[in-house]
Amino acid sequence: MLLEEDPATLIHHTTANFSVHPDKAAVARVNDSISTLQQARELRMKEAENALRKLSRQLSTMQSQHQELAASDLEMETERLSGQLADLNARLQELELQGVEGADGGGRDPVEDEVLLRLKVYRSLGIDIERDEKDGDFSRAVVRNDRKGDVHVVNLDKKFSRFFYANYFWQTL
Image 1 (cartoon, helix red, strand yellow):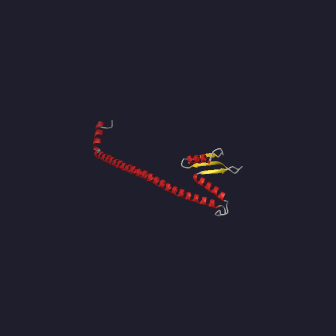
Image 2 (tube, rainbow, N blue to C red):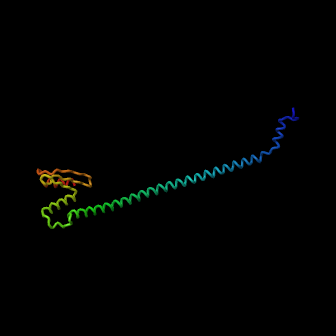
Image 3 (cartoon, rainbow, N blue to C red):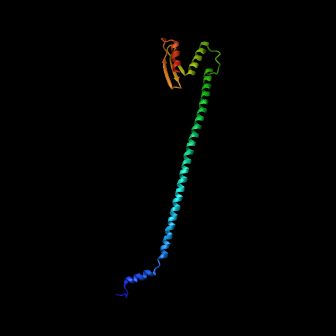
């Protein structure tokens, strides 16, 4: 054998010459630093999650307020446009009554004026009356009820009285 001493004794003396305590302390410090960094990272993650939740709540609140505001604006615009539509319809009826030339109707037949006035009253109530093409008499009435959304078509016969039709029209309106 080449060695004069026992190899186990040599290994024991060799390991005794190494100083591992500073290395162990350095590894312990590194582990402590890693643990501290991990805790700091977790704390920052929790803070970021809390901030995200807060911002999400603010976003949902803002979105609901925006939707309410948009709905309110649309409702106001609808009311404005419906008023404008009513004004334009009234103006259209005035223009229809004046006729094509814009005359006041001074040269018209009084019977024709009476019929036109009746038709205007009926139309304002939601009743459209149609003439029969054969004899020129009124043969059909369409009664519209905008509140209920109903439409009734009535065939006008001579066998029923005007009183009957008047009562029927008032009941459907």
